[in-house]
Image 1 (spheres, rainbow, N blue to C red):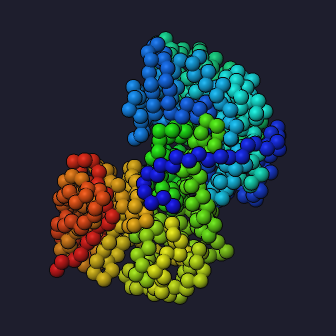
Image 2: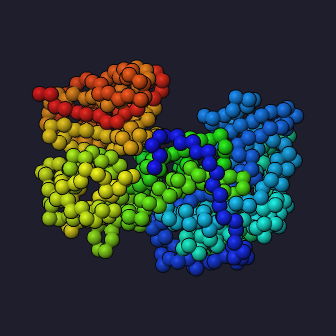
Image 3: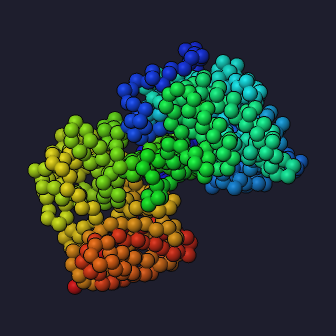
Length: 618
């Protein structure tokens, strides 16, 4: 596991070359998967999938040196924290897969990069094995991204794999080997397809505006594009590969006929294909699930949505993007999505030769080590009855063997021999608790009136280094009253317990995890105040600059009231490297249940916070 937020690995990963049996021309049918789930059940059971972004852009690796469409010489690099000093132009941050548009590369120049697309180290079986071991139950591959390059020999366009050495190596088809490898491993297979946005072919509803006179094509030209390219390509993909998922991607085109025809082709296949929401949601073609990117707004996300997330900052491979997410953060994000009743589609961007970056392999192998013991808590889950996290991580929920089970994912082990689970109000004889990764641990359970369960007899060392799962199996109907509680006169609100409403990052997983918290982005907690009185609030934080932190307590029981306190935070010695407790002030609170909304305003836009503490002073 990585000990720092950003880990730079300079070694290259050598992968095995393709096998002859991967070149089969007939995909397994959806019914051929090693699964008994119905079409309506497998999605919820899966909960975790692999996204693969691979294409011509992978060869460029985020860098282009040459003339743009205006004839100007440029040295372009995809935006990152490690751009080289001699770059004359940096991307706006769309991602390495957007390099043709961001660098304004002429079409004929971009086509020349196809000769470097060899895929000689692309190994579908290895990639699928990484995915399966990491707990992923489906794979989605980019068949055609916005640069229009097709990973199969499409009869609709000659801008396809036959123009590359990869075509000769892979029987002019990079999709079939992935589909076959996935299905042979018992995984479902999906296809990503850019239906409206196309930067190479004439007539697309969304082209590179600078390359088209007037910035866009006429309706007649768009209709011809859809008829000549999009519709026949969709048909080819469906007939060739029989995908379980069709993952649209493009602008919210408002042409109802285009959307209707695309949807009609999907529905004419005679079996159920799950579609995402990116066909044309604004005019009623919102598919079967929504697809938030990179982060989830916990208050707005719908159940059965699919969060799609990169392991660094870009979808396609960029040699400049070394901002790799840590394994615990990825796992935390997965479990937080599942807590909300959602899936996670985690992206990998192979290098130009098809090999998988070492940093990606490390994360997937870390997840595999965790899934080996904790798989039960990460598949087949439904939306948790706890909408907030418990103090040290998210809860997932599922019914198994006739019992209802809650799984508490503990990312911080405080070594004091006990663990409190506020809000589970069952008596101790109505629950059984265990650690799936350490069945030899036999903790004691005590029900504490007004608080919840107290678990004692715990070891100093965490049952699992990355995340310890506590399984709470209910022998009776769950009795739940969500909310953090005062324990021994003090209430702690940990960063891990926060409900987030915008983008965020948590790091320092090998210590006490901290939330990198940006100005104006609210975090929320649910809590119970047992008595009227004055309360003192303090924050454990690290900051480069001075700022303010505002606490707004909205009472949700009895008469509605709001209590607000704004405190001042100051610079900590060492900036973000050093934490200290800082007093935020005091305020009077009525007894009752609250939703606490906390915001900050910082001169440098963000601080790091580990936890808040509330103590009754009178």
